[in-house]
Length: 286
Image (cartoon, rainbow, N blue to C red; front, side, top):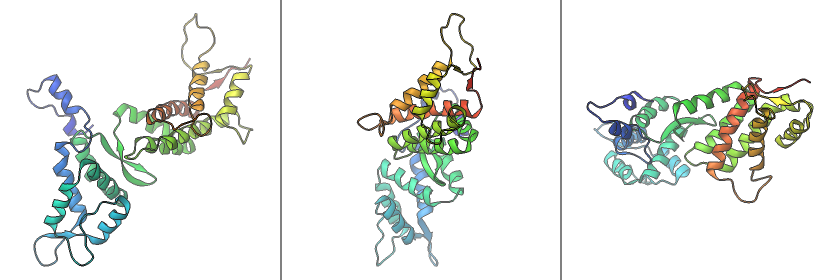
């Protein structure tokens, strides 16, 4: 959370402070002018001999190809700074965010330090993340949840890379629920394979579930159970694995995966990948 977000205005009530911290969709009032200024600074070039600026035509053409947003550049003349700012002000919230996302994609790492404080300070629902080695806008998550995700991603290089793809597909500006769900399942398969079915090069989550169910050596995770509980806590793990295995649109169902389903599967995958990566899933020797 940013310093601006933590600051509590003098005399504010709990309700007023809660409203200040609440994440805001679109481009909230506190973000509008700073974001417009950043966009202008990225798009404008200072005039060589006179005060003022003009639109960076090559960059504008690149952005037109990426976003279909026309910033007014013509083949036979310059767009001066005033016209550029007027053009930016005409864009609605969705187009402003789309343009910001595209400029982040084209920028180096320094853009993170320029844009993220603006978003965080305005309690924007969006944050700057990384997808496929490019800066992109992503939906902001609570800090504790993000810490858990980062720990799961860092805990296993191969499964972690798949989890990262699942995350960016689920929480990007243009989410792809089906891709996110698929990457979440693959991350679990990658993390579980060497423990559950190491000799099966064609193992899937389905074959691993079959192995875990028919084994006479139960699987457990190190959680304390009630004394009167029948069975073992490995049933929780199997139920979690089964739930995401059954929900795949390309294998077991008709119709597309919804975004809420994909996000739920992603968070299950983060937990399960962490358990396997830290060797917390164990087979009980009889």
